[in-house]
Image 1 (tube, rainbow, N blue to C red):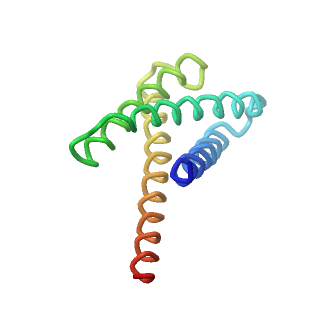
Image 2: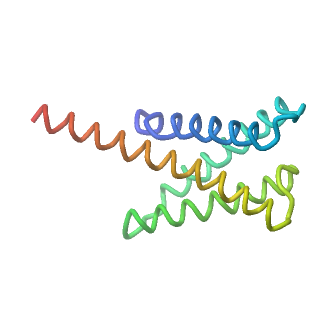
Length: 127
């Protein structure tokens, strides 16, 4: 359970913050931000559930897991964005969506790598 909170809770918070900030910067006049935040929270919970299920699949390398995770989450969030009206199927909208998704995914990946490095350093100091 500790491992789940170690990765899932911070990644959900980082994604929510990065995406909400990006949407606020892209469309500052939006009056439907509370509705968007609730929808986003539900989509992020769905992504966390999908990622949790993906963690049971055995991959030969960490890179393959990351690529499969990124592809799954990108496809799922793009489908949600199109269905919920966050993005349109126009190339510019998809490009903006891809940039926001990449920023959120990179932020989470960097944070978790950094946190694992700090934990490894702490364990090495204790040894």
